[in-house]
Length: 165
Image (cartoon, rainbow, N blue to C red; front, top):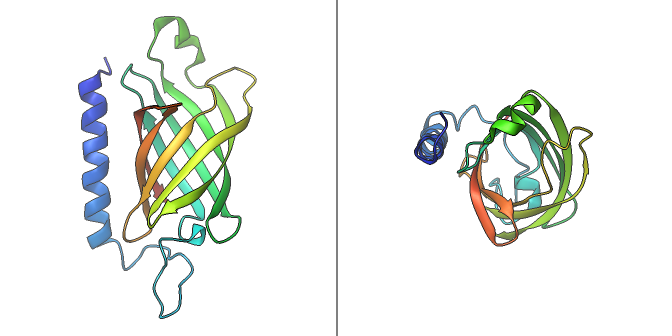
């Protein structure tokens, strides 16, 4: 059974992997476009742009695997697409939807260096796998990882971990 404790362990492991990857994999990580002086500027959307493989876990036992594609829409603007697949249903009546997929279109902005906020605004989800979400994501120092919270409204209670590829 996937419990709240398991979700917390997944997030903790994701954070630990992100920290480890910043040190170990930084030399091999794809780099975001460089700012003046050769450094990535985490305050711009270009630092977040790219493709990511991700996992989303909720406290009520839902697990989604996803692919996130983000594009820079200007200095701080971001837009993208999240392709979700339900891996584990948090409620027995939704078990038949395991393995089903949907897509969500998102847009938002970099709100502070290394932090982006995104909001779903449309979806292509014939199986109604999930609703539109809001995201608060932090970019690792290597620009290889995104870690954050997902939810709806003021309730950002689900965890999100992604690696750039």
